[in-house]
Length: 300
Image (tube, rainbow, N blue to C red; front, side):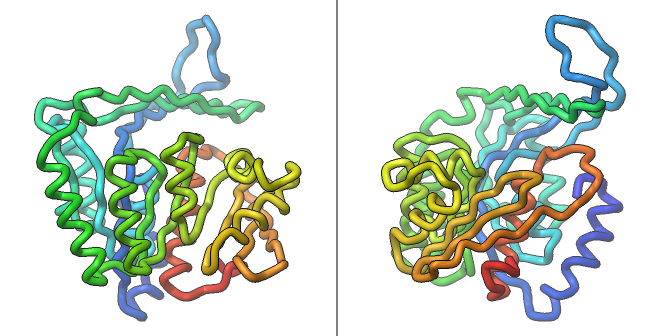
């Protein structure tokens, strides 16, 4: 997705099926982070080493997923905060190139767009470290945000979106929209990366909860003995219409649906791993695409 030529070719190949059935519109909510990706032989600790490659991309959990959904052929409206700086302009250009609807984007005057240094070790131990800078000014309360959220709630209520996705960040934006979606029976796909009172509330609202295994086990701790299959099943059983998926990296994923005793396991695709940055976000995008296409849990 990151290289423009490859992105266009992939969009043509993967989006063909979606175009044939008519693209669905998805509302995605999440972070925009400009990633500086540095590849190195190993992660340095109190030492000086040379960088093998250096590249800049438009990333962030929500942005990665939203861009991947657009590549898959979905119509994507994206809710995110960016600054009015050069990085914000870079993000807007990337989103526009994919045909994404940017009317919900919140541009904060005088704020810096979030950025990160992603250090990827390409040696024998394929490790990764991410250092994120988040400008406090980007998240300062603003009257315009309330008006934007009211407009999005109206669009959700009007049935404009087939699904809502959130990366589990920027809760002041995500929770009001997700509550509107739940009230109007619009499917909500939720990722959670850290446990707080707000993300627990978000996870409870999710139609489809997709998160890594430690998060799923932590959310299910009050009703589970620590076994991952049991954790997935217990969370899925909490409400009718609910699906829960736990991802375990090279081990694949486990999923369960409310009303079914089966916990589905799908192994990971075997491949030569170069960089896992954005892998989980891409998984979410693929699942959202499968959701709006009506595929089964195992197929998704």
